[in-house]
Length: 198
Image 1 (cartoon, rainbow, N blue to C red):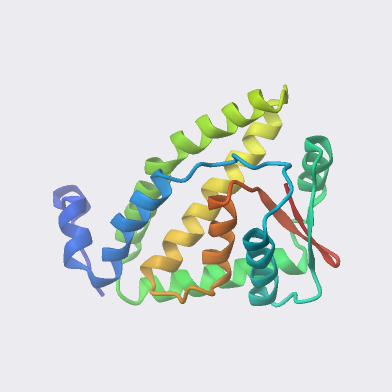
Image 2 (cartoon, rainbow, N blue to C red):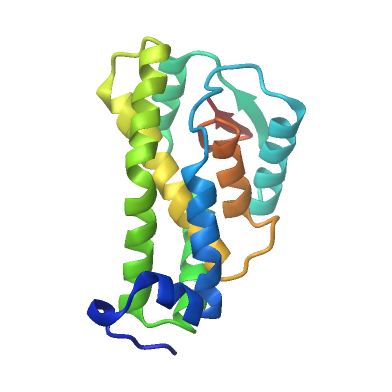
């Protein structure tokens, strides 16, 4: 386990010194260039549908078919009614816990927290700005919508950074979910046999 004095450690040096953290800087560059929420409500292309199917399969819900919503109010209602303790939510929580344990095998808890805080701070401002811009373009005058979309994207970024840090495969659910955000979407969640996406 690597134990470091956070105050005296430069992040760039930390990323270079720890093999697991070398993936963080390239990931932050990638996340900084995502065109968040640019295709909300639009007809999906084949790649987006394939990503959605791959995510549902990887998470353990192969029967959940992608359902792309065109109406923002319908998407907001779906997000509001997504069960926090649903089977899909539980599956994601288990994956997050597993990846966190993997990261803590090589980093101390304080270092991991510092790095993940850096990831959130490095992306949240751009995500929130993109969410507000998307809301304006779609004429959505609902602050809760902006909070929900940006919150989901920040969470997906956190999860994907954790996956990158621990060397997860490209077909890991967190990697696939982040790629749906890269496609300009808001993957809301799996409810029953539907994977709801705006």
